[in-house]
Image (cartoon, rainbow, N blue to C red; front, side, top):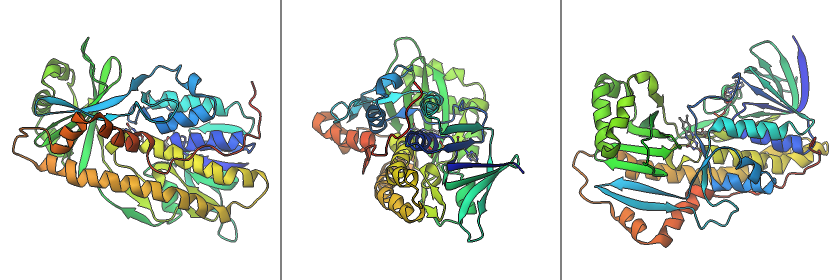
Length: 408
Ligand SMILES: Cc1cc2nc3c(=O)[nH]c(=O)nc-3n(C[C@H](O)[C@H](O)[C@H](O)COP(=O)(O)OP(=O)(O)OC[C@H]3O[C@@H](n4cnc5c(N)ncnc54)[C@H](O)[C@@H]3O)c2cc1C
């Protein structure tokens, strides 16, 4: 069995793992990232880079370079209901360098972070490396992982950033609290007709709810339905599905004819859960692996990235100074659990009070709900959801050291 060693071993090259890798490598540590896929190119992922994350790139001096990648800007969001378009979210007044959501494919974001991390000599990214088990020393402390290919990796700290179906959190037997969600989502795209454009908007009818994200020449669509009903919707047939989409967005009617096979429609089984403890000696869990977020407000990427920032803020300096990371792991959990709990409570409230009643509803919606009318009428009020969605709770700035010099 081949054996390898690094200061930090990160399992999972998603937003949490890659951001952590960049920050720990920047602090002068050797960092190995193991990613099970051959590349970052998968379209079944979120594409939003929120103002809080853009602010972190600003702090790293990388914002202008990031924004040179193809992206579109979302300054506000609206809801189409009862024949009216109601403005509900405004990001334009947030006190950050880029007060908008940058919509860019997640693979572009991940490749960008990987390119930045490669500037630091300690960074190494190993694609097609799937961790299958933890390695422990005689005292039971986690000291590495084994990959499917039979490699054994050792590290002073293992960071599990392996997503919401994390194998490592299971191996570490960390307690999981399932909060639950009343809906699942069909995720698909349709061509955008010339001249049509609407940033991000939700479109609502009794029993139906869809979010549409303008991605330049296409719309990314998230169609919500009651949990566990995917087979039922499919069984009703594509004609019925297209008809319900047409009734939701009548002016895009013909565009839905482009959905000719269920293969074009992916199912996201929505999960809302979190670990009650994020660490064992030698192991820290972050990102979706520590807390699967509901798609409400599209904050999963940004919370995952914030976990990485906190982990580096708390751990990078001390580990670089030769300290044992174990006594500090609880501090990472303590700083992150409050913002995560608050965002999940917000998502649960929206799920229970808005999404579930809408999906159950059979009576037609005759006029927009009071809260939507208020948000639409009072621009100042729209800044509140703008702040929650755009910046989240308990945002951290980057304080981890830059001890290594970039190569150029
Ligand atoms: C369809 C869809 C739409 C979404 N839309 C949005 C959105 O608009 N905005 C938003 O903020 N969030 C969105 N999300 C959620 C968002 O993508 C996640 O919250 C975010 O990617 C979490 O980042 P992460 O790094 O913790 O985990 P992930 O992004 O899941 O990354 C985990 C990585 O670990 C790798 N991996 C897993 N197991 C192993 C292993 N054993 N060994 C090695 N590698 C492993 C995986 O291949 C993956 O690359 C969406 C999610 C989905 C599925």
